[in-house]
Length: 282
Image (tube, rainbow, N blue to C red; front, top):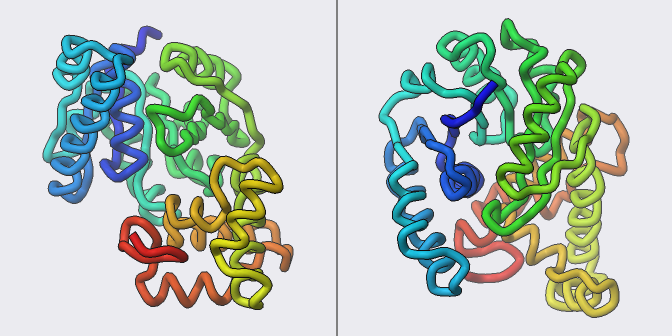
């Protein structure tokens, strides 16, 4: 199957990064979000990001303009009927994702693969919401998408080898490195990352160290490019909490229990960079 037109559902931080990556790689991109203003913000963010690539000499002005021309935003999801491949990148809740997959299953061609950028939710569950579970898989990009080379590819219980091969080839066309993960809560990346972030938050709550001290130890002592609490602010504390809840509920192990301080901060609207305040002020 020749994939030239890719639909991206969701125009938040991850959605606009995914849309940019595909547009830069020569694909026509269909972008839709349930919130119209989010699409406008996404386009502005993509223009700014591509502009930085031009300033750094990594992209010509002509290539930037061509990428932007390949990006088309729509007020409804209906034009996705013309997509050759779809990536869903909406809020990390089972209810919202399954509703989108049911809608996509109804309007797209039956040969089209429906993928999810979920960082923790079961691909098998999403596939079961469709009539094509063999063509449903996880395609978990890392943030920021235009810069990070890794893509986790998650095989659901019914995902076919052919679908995984097509997704693997697509990653190569994007200049990304695919790594296959089994369909367990958190997959590989967040199964390892989130407990570390959670433990760092416990260390703050228990007075073991300040956020600055904890991040400095991990950067200078463990050679991490970014401390776990700075990273949590970057990801979004609400997103971290959602992933930890999936790990805790899906695996049933108390070691994944979200720190009470994390719950309290999310309840207070202290979500990190996007709200202006998390473990640090922005």
